[in-house]
Image 1 (cartoon, rainbow, N blue to C red):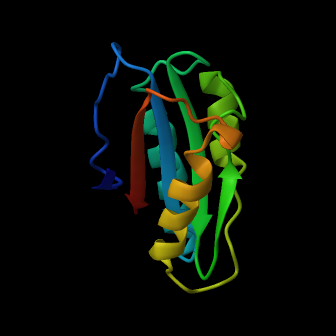
Image 2 (cartoon, rainbow, N blue to C red):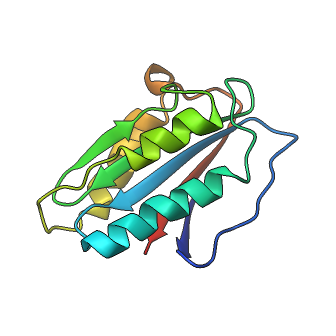
Length: 130
């Protein structure tokens, strides 16, 4: 499932009964001010989840002409650590908007055991439209 929200519509979702693997998909071809908004949005969303190795794991993909994992689901299991990873993401200089490539990377790589995904966890993908 790929949920899309505008930056001012931060979903308040609590998955307290289920482990969640949460992946952000962020377009890095957007202007700098919108990029900052996307990062703040991702940070705000993480506030709704109990981030830990057993509850919610967070990863991110950035895309433009190409897609890459900015950080995997097993990069950090603390809210502070994940938020530092979010604000450490860098934009691409490319101008393309290949969401198809981002989704391929999400399904093939980010949400695989190699990058920290868990069998039985709810897989939530959020595309930030800022």
